Length: 367
Image (cartoon, rainbow, N blue to C red):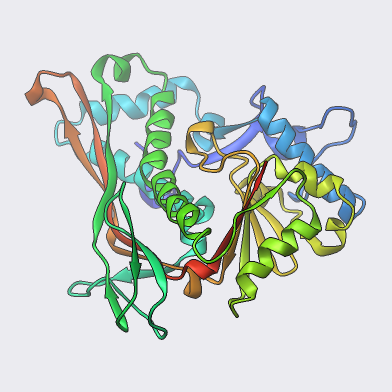
């Protein structure tokens, strides 16, 4: 049985389309040498070459030459994976099934922290017992957006120094039929893990994006462009900094990377990341001090950005608040009482979310 104290055995990694480990086996089309060195660095002869290699990595992932797999796929044969499920469903106490859900949930939480936009862009606070979700404003009469639920956002004008936030749940039932459990080779656990990510990480990011799309055109102006150039980048960035707000993040859709590597001037500003693990988590480097992030390496159902979209975001404390009460929880459930032969887990979190100042977000879009 998987032991959650030894780390999550279902945490995602990447491999070639044939299932071979990435570092020593990935070669880009038209290149003879390995794309990634044994130390995990992307092989490149210069900064400009490294930017091109990151582009090749995005292209390879989009084409399916690089794909997400689980660490478990590498370490365990199908028989062993079936044994994990067999032991869990045969345990009459339910403790193994409960522990399996906790293992998967733990990695959903870790991945959300590493790859989720929302938890990078917004100031995070963990609410203790008795704490009230609230945000302090030093300046009144600013426009903000608060999330009233998992699907509802509300614009407000802040009139007081403190604003109290509604707490709500994000989560979903993650269920699988008994037939699929018994017939599965183990991949069903990866599917349930992806469903959990969509219910938590992607739901958080979609909620942030809804607020960002509304907020970015209140006091700032949506910038349309045909090609993403250094001038366009500066124009969008200046909309945030002109209010005295330090710009900290640039969030881009995958297709804008072609513009970045193909347009003169960006290489002078850009400091790319060479560690392939960080790149595959969506962190591309820094540009004029702004951290550049993308969802290019997410599965399609986990992406939140549309092609051609870019956002410039202020420092977290100027931009938003994400407050969470308790941990991400996993509770074993089944539908036997409803006459359905399925079991799984209910995964949920209780959070409060607010975009505290519309001046902290500016956006652009390819026309």
